[in-house]
Amino acid sequence: MIIQPIDYFLIAWFVVALISTVYVAWDQFRNNPEPTVMRIAFILVTLYLGPFGLLIYILADKEPWPGAHEQFTESLWKQGIGSTIHCVAGDATGIILAAVITAILGLPMWLDLIVEYAAGFAFGLLIFQALFMRRIMGGTYWDNVRQTFLPEFMSMNAMMAGMAPVMSFLMMGRDMRAMVPTELLFWGVMALGVGVGFAVAYPVNLWMVKHGLKHGLMTVRPAGSRFALGRDAAKAGGHNHGQGHEQHGSDPQRGQHATRGAPKGRSDNACDVTVPQLVAVACVTTLLLLAGLIVPGLFVNLSLSAHDVGGSIMPRGMVMDFDTPAAAMRDMSAIHPKHVSYRAAQDARGDQGLEPRIENGTKVFSLEASVVRWNILDDVYVDAYAFNRQVPGPRLRLVEGDRVRIHFRNLLPESTTVHWHGLVVPNEMDGPAHITQDPIPPGGTYVYEYTVLQAGTFFYHTHDHADRQQAIGLYGALVIEPREETGPHADLDYVIQLQEWLKREWLTYPAMLMDGGLPNYFSINGKAYPSTDVVSMRVGQTVKFRFIGTNNNFIHPMHIHGGPFEVVALDGTTLSPPARYFADTINVGPGQRWDVIWKARRPGKWLLHCHIPHHTTNNNVEIKGGGGLTMILDVQ
Image 1 (cartoon, rainbow, N blue to C red):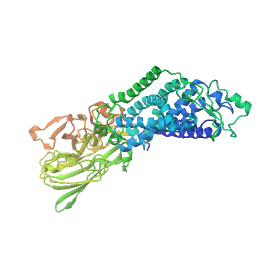
Image 2 (image 1 turned 180 degrees about the vertical axis):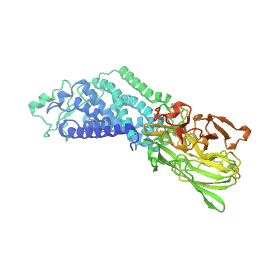
Image 3 (image 1 turned 45 degrees about the horizontal axis):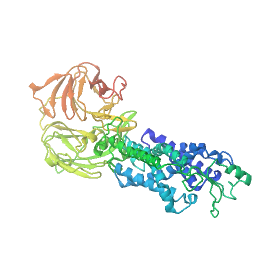
Image 4 (image 1 turned 180 degrees about the horizontal axis):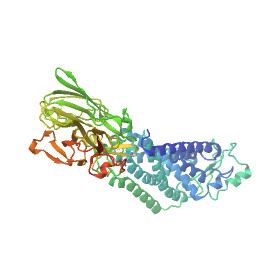
């Protein structure tokens, strides 16, 4: 699923990689006089490295014209390429197969790396070296295992020393889809890791080829095949400046095998490496391997697995340490677009009144939480958790003394609950997850029922991972009228619910006061200016604004132009006349409610907005004079 810009690059990369691999496979078996094992190795490496694998093949191994393969590949650097290709094809194949299996099993990254090393080493040694090279090397299978154990050990150490940090840092990095084998990013990370591993392993393989510890590129010209040369051509073409030859009289691929640096006892080149040199190189490659495995653990949490956080995408700038827990990563992660079940209309509005049905005198409401795509501007959408497919959720309007029953259904990809902020309710109806009730699992239901004992402005919101869920839309207004009207009167009534959003690179993250989590969009009732409502009034009319701090982070100083307003209620409690006062700015903190009455004194367009200028922009940009927490009072 394409959800990030890099996905387009990965699709293009793998298309090119596939084309490159098809070409190398066709050319190897049709035009290149080489043993089957090296043909397979080049095909696999090109599959992993894409166009870079094709480039290596053309520069180092592809016969430029018939009969020239021997001379073309005799350079030491090309022989080193051949040895590294053989190493990478075997070792990387084992590593990648193990990575897929360990991800499916949910093993932690540190154990994953160990299993991958063991699998890569075993596959490279037992399959690509001892088995596939047996015809060329001669001897028994176990003789070949013993002969190639140390060269394969050093080569594999270098290969994994390069590959392990790439996998560790990128799989446990910002976009952890890299841990999931069904995602393109997983295979992209594997390809990059193989490339880095190739680069680190090349110098070691070059040294081993030069000193006769490993083979390089080879030429095979079976008699009677299209690759066979005439006697004179064979003599000329077979001259390889000291490279060894083997004749296999009964071998179906009988012909000339030109090798460079074959293992001691298998070619004319004797191994000239001393024991101290072997020990030194083996120790250095082992230290490189240990560094590649251990150092990433100082920076990322290698105790986590694909099951813990696989598929999560973190916001840029989030600090992720070796002790960052999986739960923190999941809470900070973006909403995955695959979970969106409903696309709201561009002009859809939240905070729509929800009419109850009456059952034996009880007002019954139905609420449902799901994932929706919601426009906060005409051209900007967010993915949100929503009650009844709207942001904010539907307004519940009650009367003091009502008996209310709410049937709640959870269609989110995670558990949730509902809390009735500020209300006096039975403890089991209060909503905090793990405290007064078990979290409601995906697909689960719960019935909340209580009698309303208060009057005023309240709201409801999630109380299970509220730092995440409330930040991405799970909240709604709860307005309770007094049984007997005693409060100040206003001609109009308008609810204002504040919210902060973080939208980056097509994804929506929960806005938090943490590194990487600061919001870049702000909304009133689910819309950012200039898509916010316009309140139309006439001179002399009054409006009660019910400010609700449904946001999670900032205290918003809300200000109205055109004259002061009277503060008449706070947190659901109506102030007595002596306690009421006039102001033109109030600080609305998360969870707070303020009821104020504003009178339209003069005609014109008067602003209502947050007095933190950044909060009146959209992604740091003003549009038509403002943005974010801004709306217009149009007085005629």
